[in-house]
Length: 335
Figure 1 (tube, one colour):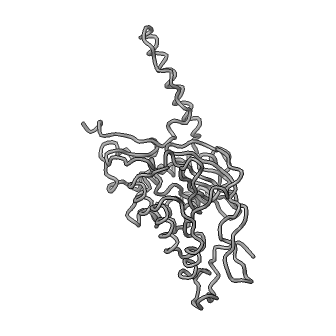
Figure 2 (cartoon, rainbow, N blue to C red; figure 1 turned 90 degrees about the vertical axis):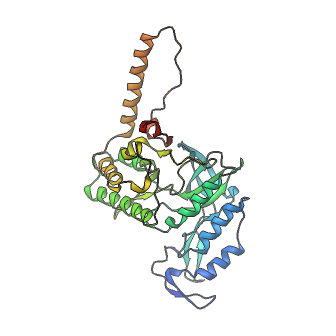
Figure 3 (cartoon, rainbow, N blue to C red; figure 1 turned 60 degrees about the horizontal axis):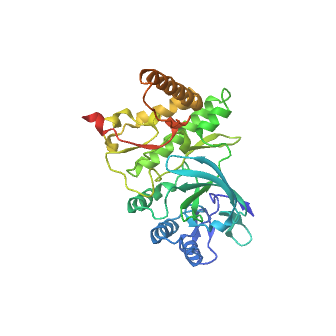
């Protein structure tokens, strides 16, 4: 048996006799997955999973519900704007191992995965479900981070189970490789980002929350690639966001949107220009965040000198605050 994406496996299906492009017979595979289908406890999530399985064209080109009891070594990694990231081992693993004897896809066994837990997602909003249904088409692209399926923890919150990328996100990669990134690797990463954005935009959609934390790096001996993550996961799962609100990380929001809330008119060159600067100029996000914190500290000290008799908020500003996704309301700037 060997791990493969099925790219060179064009053989007859032993079940129905049809040619299987990339080793995948859609009718037979869907029938098998349907017979082994695990329910999530939410009919809309189940319908989404069934839809991805029905439309799958190759292995791991679909979602499945994964029993949380099948996840071991579960550990917290980081907090995002609308959820938290964990890591662990999916003991069964994805069906991406090709068994030449049985001419069938088999599970990989224990596989390290990243898990994104959505805050307060016990009962996701209908807007969130519709968003997932719309964006699932973009999963069928090599420029997107691999998403294996969905699980549900003991609290009832939903979690997306994704491939674990050893090199981390763009911020991690730039920090750990500062000064030793070749132009070839820079171009490869930009090519991956551009390809992913083109795939999303070709469906008439927008990522709406693209920043370095949502770009996962796959670094091998041949090339360095950037995979776009969190497609369709922008915003909180538990509430609908008004159309006059913007979700994102401030340094990566098109300035045009601060006075004209219209994603249809979004300028793609702004987005790509941000990433050319971020990768080629190699800024250190932690330094930018720390400078922001120092500026805030100095500002508050000045205010305290002016109003000694008034109590000020003691809330601390997180050092990475400007690199956290949040909801912005720029409508007041239009008045």
